Image (cartoon, rainbow, N blue to C red; front, side, top):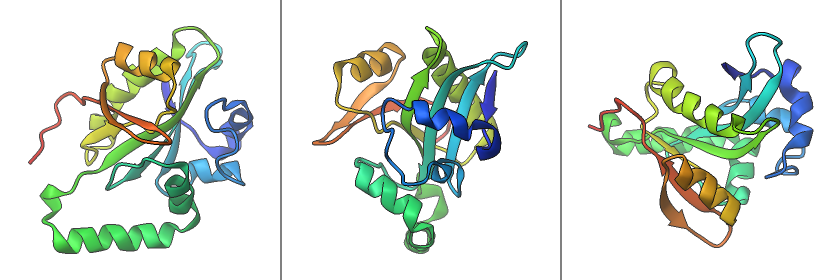
Length: 172
């Protein structure tokens, strides 16, 4: 079952992050402002099977440096979004959910979590128009994302962005 995580209950799992273990000086940043942590949790015994960390933004995030900057200076991010909204008609602005770290404790749970998230987003975050990862440039990440239906969007020097299609999302 997909769960939106709170820091009090799920902060302990951040030490297990194999993708970006030292991204933030304080792992509570993963739970603040437009940052979210999602988990696949067993309904019966509440076992955590997989964790996914993500952030909402109006642009594609390609570097850890930018991700840290968004976390450290949330006010500037708000001002940037307001500026974009001031220039463009609201219907022309994307809201992107960027998964930047994913790990599982049980085989197949990462795939289950990403698929549950793709179903969950349109219902619970209706402004999200795109799900675009900020993935490490590894063969394992490529096989995982392309094997789960994502398409290669943008390889760059630090990361690779893959895009997942959201069902029932109408772009204006």
